[in-house]
Length: 316
View 1 (tube, helix red, strand yellow):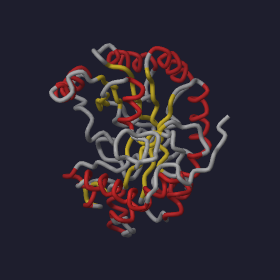
View 2: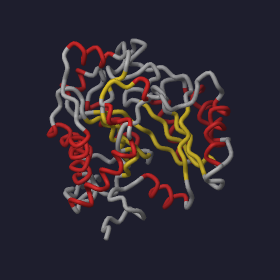
View 3: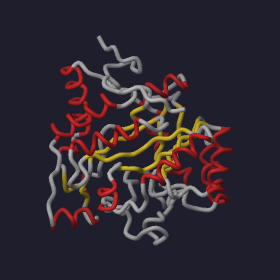
View 4: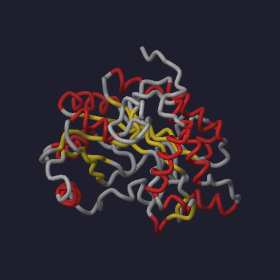
C-alpha cells in the first residue's frame, strides 16, 4: 500500500502529472519551444563558451526548430498529443538557452503570443538566476497575475568548486537572491540540478538537496550528467576521464535525494533525456523508461518514499 499522499499511481514521489491533475483537473502537457535566445554565459556578459556540458542546442534538444514560428512549433506538438488526449490543456515551455535574456518588449511579444493559443493554461520559463533584470521581474509579476507562471532556475550544484569547474559564472548568493525575489512576488520556482558532475561525491549530491530543502522552491528537475559530442565536457573527459555513475549508483543517489526532499516539492524530472546521436556517456541513459521503472521498483523494495527522511523546515 502506497502511503505517499501526493500520488494516484504507483509512484512514491510527487509527480508533475499528479500535480497538474490536482491543479487543472485535466491532462496537461508542456510544449517545449525554442524562441532563439542566447545566454549571458555565451555572449561574454558573464562568461564565454557556456556551461561545459551545454550542447549547441542550449539544453533544447527536444524543443522546436527555432526557424519555425512559435505557432508552428506549438501546433506540431499539439497535433500529436490531440490524438491520444483530445481534451488536454497545455503549458508553453520556453526551454532552449536563457529565456529571460532579452528586452521586456521582446519578451512580452513572445510570451503573450503563446498565451493566446487555444487551451494554454500557463508558461514555464527556463533561465539563469543572473538573467532576470528588475524590469523583467516587474513584468513577470504582472504575468503571474493572469496565468500560471513557473520560472525554472539552473543551479546544478550547491558546491562552489564544482560550479566554477562547469563554468556556471554565478554564485549561490545570486541564486538565493533570485529565488527570494521570485517568491516575494508569489512566482513558483523549479530548480535544475545535475547528478554525476565531475569529481562530485554522493555526499556532495545529497548536500545539494539539503541546501535546496531550506529554500522556498516548488519543484525540482533531477538530471544525470550527459557527456555530449562537441562540448567542453567531452574535451575534459577525453583529457582527464572522471567517474561516470552507473545506473545502479544513480538510482541509489536519486532515492536518497527523494527521501531527504520535502514531500510537497514537485518532481518535474527524475532522469536526463539526451539526444541519442550526441550521447557519449552514460549509454544507459538511452533507456529512460527502464531507469524510471527501476527507481519505482527500488523504492518499493526499500519501502521508502519522498520526504521519508526530510527535516521540517520553516520557510517563513
